[in-house]
Length: 382
Figure 1 (cartoon, rainbow, N blue to C red):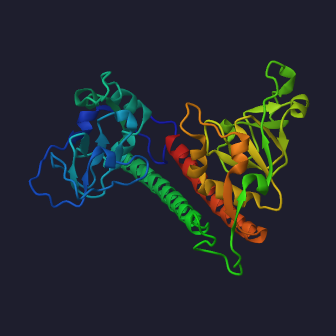
Figure 2: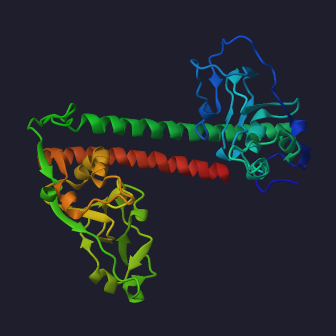
Figure 3: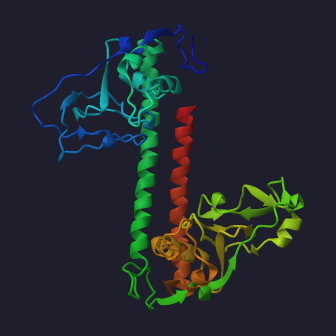
């Protein structure tokens, strides 16, 4: 057996081995607690390329793992908790530490444990609330494996791919963290009229404005679904946005589309309106980049003498305060009257535009990092 895609220079057939022929489980325990990395299952982060060490709380077992070992969370294995150990430390009993036997590549085996075939067998566990992978079952999983030279080449390739994934993840986390910080600093605190951080040349105090004063407010609707002529099977007709369609801060597509007949019955707003979810999934907000209709779970602001992206960013900053208006009902809801009364503190339009443009660029950077991360993860999976 050989893979469909292969590095040049390798022609030998792959051979089948049981997993226990390739690795052994670490079982050494240590008395000393002088280890900088001490991990519990919850500290074994998946898909980030990191082990988070905890030096303040010591594990009970003090089972040792070495640099180059493969750590695998056996409790609820479907959570995909695994990591390659870049340094030694001690671990909890809910984590296996695999070490490769002579003649096998730890980097290659690290790829193997992430494959669907391996995980499907690992996840055959008992139907308890806290299922655990069974070593007797896992140790007998059959693995098809190449020569050590090809193992090393494959392992090094995926090491580089994992490094790229980790890099994209770090950039995404840093940019999200930066945005969160700037949302706090570039908008005034409650009861204040000036932000902590400001673009040059802007000195005027910010003033409180209700959403009903920021622009015209519309609540969406749904053209009768019983009349199929209201709806289109073409994705190039009229978009009809529901909260399910809101997956980014700008939207120009929808799951369902309206016909011209349905469009004429729908609540329609021009492009660059702010669509704010106000029933159930409160906090999923977006700007429509083309004219759009939308359902009754969404209120829209068509801004007048105000910057749309600034208003969107202000609503993101105030999402918890806005959501609190819905109360604790089974289905959270903010009606149009309450929506119109919600107040933001805002500057004059030129400063709004500067802030809006800044956060638009920051959100584009976040979206770019997210796309790169998703593409690289997809490449690895393929």
